Amino acid sequence: MAEIRTRMGDGSVVHMQPDEVRRELENGVADAAKKAKIEPLTDEEITRLYDMIADPKKVVSVEPGNELVLSYDSMPMKLNRVGIPIERPNLMKVFERGFGADMLECAYVHYSIKPLKVNLSEEVAFFTESLYGSIAPMVYGAMPNMGLYTKPDGPCENPSELLPLGKIKEAQEAQMEAAQYLHDDIMLTASAMYEAGADGFNFDTTASTGDAEFYAVLTAVEKLVAKYPEIGIEVGLSGDFIFGFHGEVEYKGKRLAGMFPHNQLKMVEEAGASICGPVVTTNSNRSYAWNLARAITMTKECSRVAKIPIHANVGMGVGGVPMCVTTPIDCVSRSSTAMAEIGKADGL
Amino acid sequence: MEKQELFQEAIDAILNCDPTAAVDIATKAIQFGVNPAEMLDQGFAAGIREMGELFGSGQAFLPQLILAAQTMQAATDILNVEIKKSGEVQNRGKMVFATVAGDVHDIGKGIVVSMLGTQGIEIIDLGRDVPIDTIIEAAVEAKADIIGTSALLTTTMVQQQKLEEELKKRGIRENFKTIIGGAPCTQRWADKIGADAYAEDAAEAVEKVVAMLSARG
Image 1 (cartoon, rainbow over the protein chains, first blue to last red):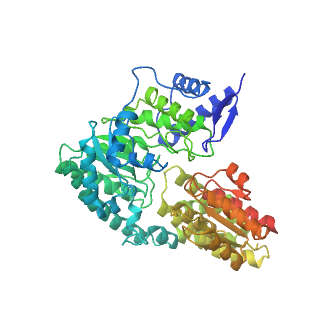
Image 2 (image 1 turned 60 degrees about the horizontal axis):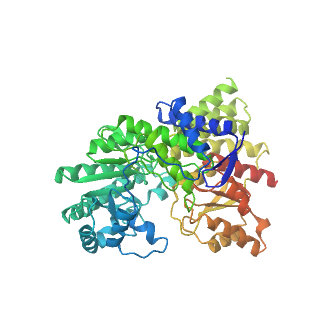
Image 3 (image 1 turned 120 degrees about the vertical axis):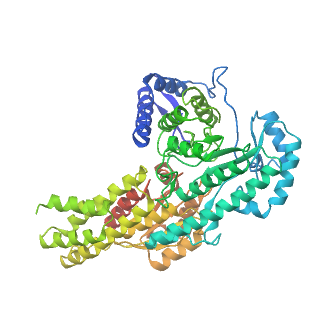
């Protein structure tokens, strides 16, 4: 049989035999099911994934009616970083009217809560100006990026330096101190944006610094929802499982470290957020088929247990998409299609 | 006492992060005449590998990994004395390690450094966001055997390529072995840029570094 043109997780093109692709898919499903302790995809679903990968067309898409809601993260930077210098108020219109975004996200290039505090009043001004020109819901977005609160970037001791020295208790205390700073800054910045007219806030790449960061975001979300009952909040995650950098942090009586996407989602739900963006990270060493199968298996479980909408992350290094500078459209389109038709996501 | 029982106890000591038990087991192994190198490899190091797997699957966390490494070190200190006495000691060598310029991600590097430290390898950890010149100067000054670099970003992994080129340009490429790692890196990337080795995780880094040092003779 003819070989199938596909890719590895680093984006390089490979040609695989059909049975090899099928095996990679089965292995990816098995890995997800084993690690996250969830149900595997059915044979029929694996065959559907196989058909998507084997499809010779460059771009694969959904059947009419299966289209998903699109909410981009770090939206303004996507064009600016490739040298298209459009001011943000107009950029919002480009995404809304040109790229089909259903939810808009205004953000600044540093895309982090801590520095946002510094230019908050300027950002509020840009944000309100952006609001005047668009119709779709618009949130403000930033990454919690708790690392910015530790030395050399912030006031707290750096747990990355303390841990290798065996100073575990000190490292845990430093993380909780940083988490408190982060929590307070989230309250300040998200409140300012909501009061300026934002439909809500998007916390992107949450828990990238581990379980303590996740805790800070969850507790802040809970308080924001109590403060502003109508606020819309999207919590986008950062990886398959919550990195146990602290290891013992609990939220609502549950240890956050080691949580897989479907459990992360339940925490986000309990905090009162409106949308959850699960992430399954790509392994550069494995095939696209393996990564896609793994991402879809975990996302499907999220959709099964979710009470709030799921906007699956599909982009560089997530959702099965290879980790390379320019994400290949063949993979992005297949991952997006699979997220809709098998992962049963509500949005991307 | 059966050797296998001791190996299992050593593995348990590592998984329980119990340095007191590790010291007791190492001492017991010496009393029972178990080959100390074998005890390290099939007992304590096997425990570290198992801990690495638990960590990789989200069942163990960073503090446990660090405690496990400390537990291993406690046992290694005792067993190394015996290894030296028996003349089986290997000169493990020196390694310079850094996260490349433009990249501030050093959690993964910290894990690798901790794990390598348990193998009796002298690690010179240059930290994060380290320019190539600094890496090379440190390696030359320390007369390092291996240069290890970590990059988490697709935009910074190119620094690993520049390191290879710079070493060649200075005519000192053959003085060092190089190993690379980090999320976007692969064996194909290592082959492409001419690095001597690639490691997907900390356990593999230990395996490959030890192999390179052993092959050095």
